[in-house]
Image (cartoon, rainbow, N blue to C red; front, side):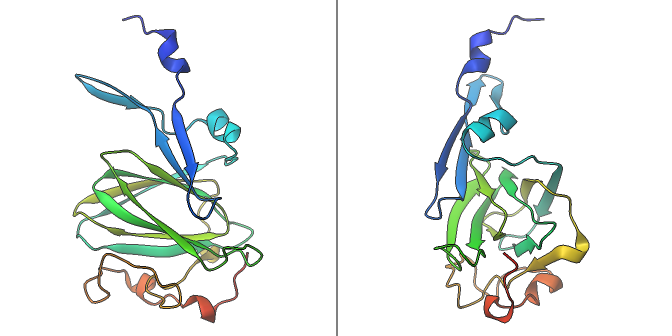
Length: 196
Protein backbone atom coordinates (compact mmCIF):
# COMPACT_ATOMS: atom_id res chain seq x y z
CA UNK A 1 0.00 0.00 0.00
CA UNK A 2 1.31 3.44 -0.93
CA UNK A 3 2.54 5.64 1.90
CA UNK A 4 0.22 8.61 2.47
CA UNK A 5 1.75 11.79 3.81
CA UNK A 6 0.54 12.43 7.35
CA UNK A 7 0.64 16.16 6.61
CA UNK A 8 -2.17 15.68 4.07
CA UNK A 9 -4.59 14.75 6.83
CA UNK A 10 -3.59 17.67 9.05
CA UNK A 11 -4.46 20.38 6.51
CA UNK A 12 -7.50 22.47 7.46
CA UNK A 13 -10.29 20.50 5.82
CA UNK A 14 -13.19 22.96 6.10
CA UNK A 15 -13.91 26.60 5.39
CA UNK A 16 -16.98 27.72 7.37
CA UNK A 17 -18.69 31.11 7.05
CA UNK A 18 -22.01 32.60 8.11
CA UNK A 19 -24.73 33.88 5.80
CA UNK A 20 -26.93 36.94 6.48
CA UNK A 21 -28.65 34.92 9.21
CA UNK A 22 -25.50 34.14 11.25
CA UNK A 23 -26.58 30.70 12.53
CA UNK A 24 -26.90 29.44 8.95
CA UNK A 25 -23.48 28.42 7.70
CA UNK A 26 -21.90 27.68 4.34
CA UNK A 27 -19.30 24.96 4.67
CA UNK A 28 -16.78 24.40 1.91
CA UNK A 29 -14.79 21.19 2.34
CA UNK A 30 -11.26 21.43 1.03
CA UNK A 31 -10.81 19.23 -2.04
CA UNK A 32 -7.51 17.52 -2.66
CA UNK A 33 -7.30 16.67 -6.33
CA UNK A 34 -5.05 14.79 -8.70
CA UNK A 35 -5.42 12.98 -12.02
CA UNK A 36 -7.96 10.57 -10.48
CA UNK A 37 -10.34 13.23 -9.20
CA UNK A 38 -10.50 14.55 -5.64
CA UNK A 39 -10.86 13.65 -1.98
CA UNK A 40 -12.86 15.80 0.48
CA UNK A 41 -13.72 15.36 4.13
CA UNK A 42 -17.31 16.58 4.22
CA UNK A 43 -18.04 16.18 7.92
CA UNK A 44 -15.80 15.93 10.95
CA UNK A 45 -17.39 16.07 14.41
CA UNK A 46 -14.41 17.76 16.07
CA UNK A 47 -13.87 20.22 13.21
CA UNK A 48 -17.51 21.26 13.21
CA UNK A 49 -17.62 21.58 17.03
CA UNK A 50 -14.46 23.68 16.99
CA UNK A 51 -16.26 25.97 14.51
CA UNK A 52 -19.33 26.25 16.77
CA UNK A 53 -21.53 23.70 15.01
CA UNK A 54 -22.47 21.16 17.66
CA UNK A 55 -24.64 18.68 15.75
CA UNK A 56 -24.36 14.94 16.22
CA UNK A 57 -25.77 13.58 12.97
CA UNK A 58 -27.58 10.26 13.17
CA UNK A 59 -29.39 9.91 9.83
CA UNK A 60 -28.47 10.48 6.18
CA UNK A 61 -31.18 11.21 3.60
CA UNK A 62 -30.86 11.34 -0.17
CA UNK A 63 -33.34 12.70 -2.69
CA UNK A 64 -33.23 12.55 -6.46
CA UNK A 65 -35.30 14.99 -8.53
CA UNK A 66 -35.58 14.14 -12.20
CA UNK A 67 -37.26 17.31 -13.56
CA UNK A 68 -35.73 20.77 -13.62
CA UNK A 69 -37.85 23.04 -11.41
CA UNK A 70 -38.66 20.45 -8.76
CA UNK A 71 -39.43 22.17 -5.45
CA UNK A 72 -39.09 20.38 -2.11
CA UNK A 73 -40.06 22.19 1.07
CA UNK A 74 -40.24 24.23 3.07
CA UNK A 75 -39.89 21.49 5.71
CA UNK A 76 -39.11 21.24 9.42
CA UNK A 77 -39.80 18.94 12.36
CA UNK A 78 -41.52 20.18 15.50
CA UNK A 79 -40.26 19.67 19.07
CA UNK A 80 -39.28 17.39 20.62
CA UNK A 81 -37.96 15.96 17.34
CA UNK A 82 -36.43 19.07 15.79
CA UNK A 83 -33.60 18.54 13.32
CA UNK A 84 -30.47 20.34 12.25
CA UNK A 85 -29.36 19.45 8.73
CA UNK A 86 -26.20 19.51 6.68
CA UNK A 87 -27.23 19.75 3.02
CA UNK A 88 -25.06 19.07 -0.03
CA UNK A 89 -25.59 18.33 -3.72
CA UNK A 90 -24.07 15.17 -5.18
CA UNK A 91 -25.27 15.82 -8.73
CA UNK A 92 -26.79 18.89 -10.36
CA UNK A 93 -27.66 22.26 -8.79
CA UNK A 94 -30.25 23.66 -6.37
CA UNK A 95 -31.48 27.04 -5.19
CA UNK A 96 -31.44 26.42 -1.44
CA UNK A 97 -33.68 28.33 1.00
CA UNK A 98 -33.56 28.53 4.81
CA UNK A 99 -36.29 30.38 6.78
CA UNK A 100 -35.88 31.41 10.43
CA UNK A 101 -38.90 30.24 12.47
CA UNK A 102 -37.51 31.11 15.91
CA UNK A 103 -39.98 33.58 17.45
CA UNK A 104 -37.38 35.23 19.71
CA UNK A 105 -34.84 35.65 16.91
CA UNK A 106 -34.10 39.09 15.41
CA UNK A 107 -34.30 37.38 12.01
CA UNK A 108 -37.65 35.66 12.65
CA UNK A 109 -39.50 35.13 9.32
CA UNK A 110 -36.47 36.16 7.31
CA UNK A 111 -34.74 33.84 4.88
CA UNK A 112 -31.40 33.28 3.19
CA UNK A 113 -30.74 31.62 -0.14
CA UNK A 114 -27.66 30.02 -1.63
CA UNK A 115 -26.88 27.97 -4.72
CA UNK A 116 -25.52 24.53 -3.98
CA UNK A 117 -24.02 22.46 -6.76
CA UNK A 118 -21.95 19.35 -7.21
CA UNK A 119 -19.09 21.19 -8.90
CA UNK A 120 -17.94 23.37 -6.01
CA UNK A 121 -19.08 21.15 -3.13
CA UNK A 122 -20.51 23.84 -0.83
CA UNK A 123 -22.76 22.63 1.97
CA UNK A 124 -25.40 24.47 4.01
CA UNK A 125 -25.81 23.92 7.73
CA UNK A 126 -29.47 24.42 8.72
CA UNK A 127 -29.85 24.74 12.52
CA UNK A 128 -32.86 23.60 14.52
CA UNK A 129 -35.69 26.11 14.41
CA UNK A 130 -35.51 26.73 10.67
CA UNK A 131 -37.55 25.58 7.68
CA UNK A 132 -35.61 24.31 4.67
CA UNK A 133 -36.36 23.74 1.02
CA UNK A 134 -34.93 23.98 -2.47
CA UNK A 135 -35.71 24.19 -6.16
CA UNK A 136 -33.66 22.23 -8.66
CA UNK A 137 -31.71 24.27 -11.21
CA UNK A 138 -30.78 21.21 -13.29
CA UNK A 139 -32.52 17.99 -14.20
CA UNK A 140 -31.43 14.78 -12.48
CA UNK A 141 -30.30 16.51 -9.30
CA UNK A 142 -29.36 14.46 -6.24
CA UNK A 143 -29.25 16.02 -2.76
CA UNK A 144 -27.78 14.49 0.38
CA UNK A 145 -28.52 15.78 3.84
CA UNK A 146 -27.46 14.66 7.24
CA UNK A 147 -29.88 15.11 10.15
CA UNK A 148 -29.14 15.18 13.86
CA UNK A 149 -32.49 13.61 14.82
CA UNK A 150 -34.41 10.75 13.28
CA UNK A 151 -37.41 11.37 11.05
CA UNK A 152 -40.58 11.54 13.16
CA UNK A 153 -43.71 11.39 10.96
CA UNK A 154 -45.97 12.86 13.66
CA UNK A 155 -43.68 15.90 13.92
CA UNK A 156 -43.27 16.44 10.19
CA UNK A 157 -44.36 19.99 9.28
CA UNK A 158 -43.80 22.74 6.77
CA UNK A 159 -44.83 26.05 5.27
CA UNK A 160 -45.83 26.84 1.71
CA UNK A 161 -42.80 27.40 -0.51
CA UNK A 162 -44.46 30.27 -2.39
CA UNK A 163 -45.87 32.08 0.66
CA UNK A 164 -46.01 35.72 -0.53
CA UNK A 165 -45.30 37.01 2.98
CA UNK A 166 -41.83 35.42 2.78
CA UNK A 167 -41.07 37.15 -0.55
CA UNK A 168 -38.60 34.49 -1.67
CA UNK A 169 -37.33 35.13 -5.20
CA UNK A 170 -37.56 31.55 -6.42
CA UNK A 171 -35.98 30.81 -9.81
CA UNK A 172 -39.08 28.85 -10.87
CA UNK A 173 -42.56 30.20 -11.55
CA UNK A 174 -45.40 28.77 -9.48
CA UNK A 175 -47.11 27.35 -12.58
CA UNK A 176 -43.90 25.57 -13.64
CA UNK A 177 -42.88 24.15 -10.26
CA UNK A 178 -42.98 20.38 -9.84
CA UNK A 179 -44.31 19.69 -6.34
CA UNK A 180 -45.68 16.83 -4.30
CA UNK A 181 -49.35 17.10 -3.36
CA UNK A 182 -48.23 17.33 0.27
CA UNK A 183 -45.92 20.31 -0.35
CA UNK A 184 -48.50 22.10 -2.52
CA UNK A 185 -50.97 21.96 0.39
CA UNK A 186 -48.68 23.29 3.13
CA UNK A 187 -49.99 26.31 5.08
CA UNK A 188 -48.69 29.85 4.93
CA UNK A 189 -46.51 30.99 7.82
CA UNK A 190 -49.19 33.40 9.06
CA UNK A 191 -51.59 30.45 9.43
CA UNK A 192 -49.44 28.52 11.88
CA UNK A 193 -47.96 29.19 15.30
CA UNK A 194 -44.23 28.63 15.14
CA UNK A 195 -43.23 25.89 17.60
CA UNK A 196 -39.77 27.42 18.06
